[in-house]
Length: 133
Image 1 (cartoon, rainbow, N blue to C red):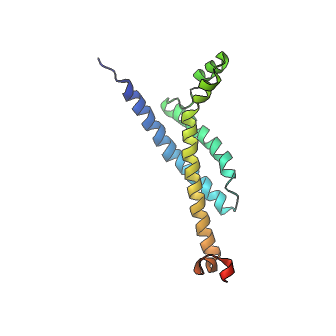
Image 2 (cartoon, rainbow, N blue to C red):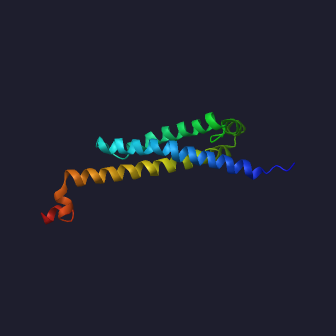
């Protein structure tokens, strides 16, 4: 019997990517839109997406047993003093954070653009420059 170790990695990556983009992406879009509709600054999205990406990683582990943050290996490396290798264990979580942050920021910008066009149509009609008024 021939076991392909890359098959497991491809399956884990497919599960991680689908959970991150489908479930996490929907939440990131909702967070970005909510911040824009409430006229909050984009900087608040950073904290929200840190928590959201950790939750998405937890869902990968809880639903499909895909270890996005391998806590056991990270703790073992920290206890041996291998700080650099321990921080590399957060790599996939960092990619999740970056994807969700980009998705949320795109939703924020799109929503804010629609708000500005709807609320200040005279700026869009004259090229967007107040000095041309």
